[in-house]
Every structure is written in C-alpha cells, then in structure tokens.
Length: 215
Image (cartoon, rainbow, N blue to C red; front, side, top):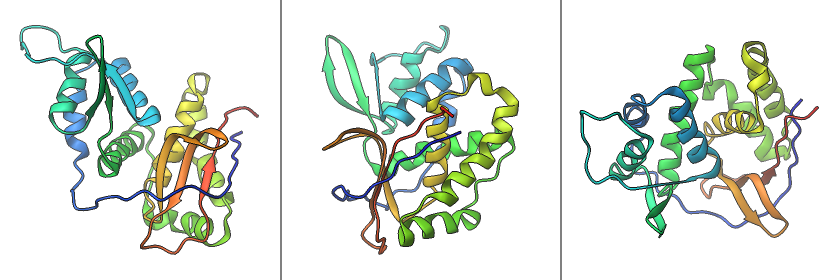
C-alpha cells in the first residue's frame, strides 16, 4: 500500500512556458546505454533533480558509449547545467522547470510503453480538480493503485519507493495547476514532493507528499 501525507504552504516558483518539450532528445541520448545505466541516470535526475559525473570534452565513436558521455551530452544539449565543481567532479542539476517537464514527459512515455499504460490528462482532470478545490488526494491514491497493480504482477519484488515516486510524478506532471519540486527542503525537513500553486490557476490548497511503499 502507498501512504501519503499532505499539508499546506510553501513559496511560489516562477516558470517559463515558452520552450517546447522534446523528450525524444533525452531518449536518443540515453538509448545507447545499457538499460541498467540508463535507468540509473533517469532515476537520479528524476528523483533527486541532480546528478554527479565527469565532463567529457571529446567523444570517440570507436570506444564504448559511457555514462559520462550521456551525462555530458545532456549537459551540452541544455538538459542539465553545472551547479558546482568539486575535485573535477561536476554536480549537475536540472536548469529550470520547463526542462523538468521534458524529463517527466520522457519517463511517462517510457512507463506507458513498457507497461501498456495510458496516462491521459483528460482522464486525470478530476484528480487535480479535487486537489485544488477540496484539498484531498483520494483520487490520486486511487489512480496510483490502478497503475501499481500491473507493475506488482510484473516485478513487484524490485519495486521500491523511488518507483512509487516516479509513478506519482508521472501523474502529477500532467497537471497545470501545481508546480512540482522533488526532495525539497522545508521548515519541517525534506519532503518527497512539494506542490505549490501556479499563479494563473486559483487553487485553494498546496501540498507536500511523503511517499512510502510500506503496508
């Protein structure tokens, strides 16, 4: 069972919606890696919104394609930016909220293809309306349960909290009412997901969600 906590409050975050998403660019950069390494990169970027690695300055087509190469190409394509450097190790972060949405779109489509899911905004609208107008997440929990069922049958032994978090973000990323932050520091500590109001929409509530796969 997934457990959730929700509460109100946190400052707003300003976004720029003038950039067109291109999830295929991420797919093309990562597809040459073994699946385990590809998933590792996406999970770090998706869950923690940051990743560490070296910066490749030259690429040799005759040598194996490495994790460092993929991360560096994500950086050169503006899909990551360098937050700081320590002893030759780069600390990369997602540049802005628009790029976050590109990663979310990529992973959502990967989930849909792998598990034959359909995450459609027209089918999820009631979830976001309930959250914004009633401050409740019962429809969100219900939808997560529906998605987890085939995953449980497929490979539940390898299902971790990070997988649950990716499912929840995949659903929430379809909304235009809330801005989503992962692993955010707040006055009470770090929260898994923080949902703050986006100015054009009149949500009565904001949320933090702490996720757990324990029963």
